[in-house]
Image (cartoon, rainbow, N blue to C red; front, side):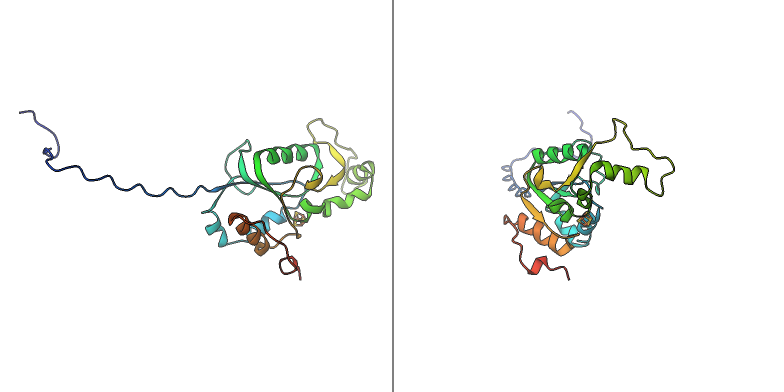
Length: 206
Ligand code: SF4
């Protein structure tokens, strides 16, 4: 008789048990990318102010590409939702924004810089030449007066533009920054399949 190692194998005489019912598949997470253009990062900090609510949120969404997530992803993936802070000031920013627009289903303008231009657009009342001269030639901190002209440096546009002047925006979340409750309301409404409705209540800043 052939010897076996381990447990003695006995021939089954009973019928095999019915296969266990397959566990229901977990619902797919919503894929999210975020980016900041000309802004101060305050809107992303306000997103982080969701604090413990982030734990529950991360069960529903995957942030695949973002300046606040170390995903080691170099190329922007296809996502469901793109969230953008800041406005468009230069050639690189326009390129990045258009890429995200192409790769997301819903694009959110997060904060007043993205919605209206806000602080970065204060320069729009001056010419580009005057802005560059003030920043690089006349600034008190400059020891060498030199306007950067290396081809690698993105070209500054004559005006700062809100996102909606460059691409189609699906939802604007106003505020400088929008507070965490406002961001929470907007995201949870979207996750529930509803478009957030702004009212006096969630647009009060005092
Ligand atoms: S809206 Fe306000 S907080 Fe957000 S990026 Fe602009 S300046 Fe910063």
